[in-house]
Image 1: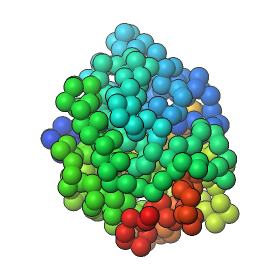
Image 2: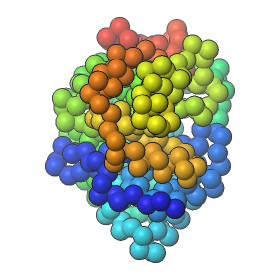
Image 3: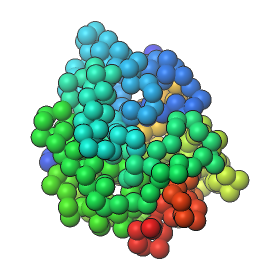
Image 4: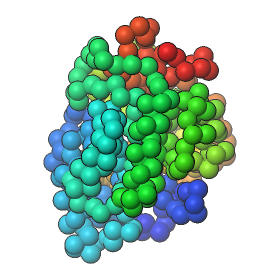
Length: 336
């Protein structure tokens, strides 16, 4: 097994001056990999040199991943303070007190006494069952509510007060939603998780977040080829087949996926690629420590943005919503 020195991996500075790794490993098996496969990959990734792991209650694998964290710490492979662990409260746990219960369960499952970064997974309590098809709709779903979101955020702030969580974050937000909630936050988000890859760069939101000393963490960094079928449409752009990405990959003698990850880290986001294959997760980490893309290559990818959102979120739509575009406030106001 090849090992990469974690000290060689670039870092991101959080708003309080602390640092986190500039690349991590996702743990969403996308309905295609078992919890055992994912946790085995996490075990291998710790040995390889990963220190940031992006978890979530809804992924259904935190109990097995927790055993891996415990074993790695007990073995002396890594100290707890060297790991940066994130997890998320799922949409069915936004009610009063439920965020605290969600965090407590994640702490128990992950065998940790604190979480580094705790996210609100989606900005509304619109629940869908894991693994549902893309046409599934919950009749109880509602549009985004500032009051409801802030009630959830207040519970997240309590987690920080209690010492259970170091930082809190938001995910899949839009500028109109952030404009509405950021002024109300007592503790601001340290990071925003958002979809980021060469064909979907979200430049305006990306700049907005960085300007406020909030870190963008990018999911689907290589276009998530193993994402659930419910999230696939015929018009989707395949990032690793984009001519600009393929051309740069040939110039560097690497797989196009590596170009996507290099681009992400050099641009300033923290990608969280997922793979259960040792050769892939090893090369994903190693590539950010060597052979950077040139300025011209970075500019070529910047020009290649297609505005192609892959994780559309249509299963969270409420009665009266037209289609998935309503989730993303594309006209500049919060869609009701």
